[in-house]
Length: 234
Image 1 (cartoon, rainbow, N blue to C red):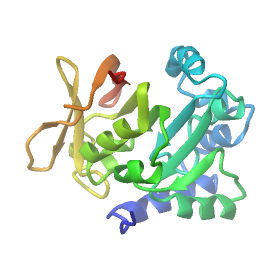
Image 2: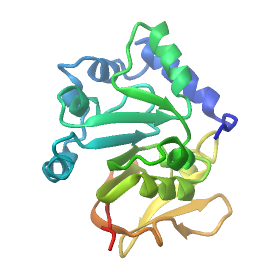
Image 3: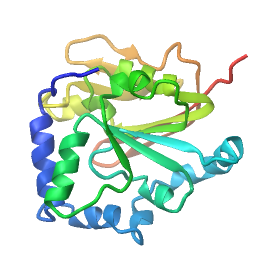
């Protein structure tokens, strides 16, 4: 499916143009994501305990991992270059990011596919991923509920769905640009989404997802993470 670029994506492109030029606020993060010997510094190590089981389930193949809303350079690239797993990244701006990477002399650190999170089931029809991961991008989507539903569709039974990002980002950013949703955890642990003026919605409801881990860290505001395991089919 083809969709027009959502409001705020122009700012996202300007941000990454500046960062990839190495004149932005995080040049060291770009070095880490583009240097094979430093990618491990950006890798989310809390995922490591899950990979032994995933490798056994996928054998003799490598586990397939999907990074949703990855930006131009996936944080998961270390696992890809060391053959811990096969990695695909998908982002609505992938084609433009490939242009920016070339402009600034960088190469993509994994396969980068154009697409919206809401359309994963159509983009990857018939493909089952062992883990689907989204880092600080779910609240940027047009419909977080539809993205979570699509992620749950493309992850295989027994596989994992991992969501992390800032809590209540819409409110914190004044509902500007891509920040049109608040995500937060409720207890017992559920992932809730609320749009400006809208009612709260538990967007993980009815998806055969079991919460296996969660995390909240108060930094400037709450950083949240929730990990689900998809139920095996009967």
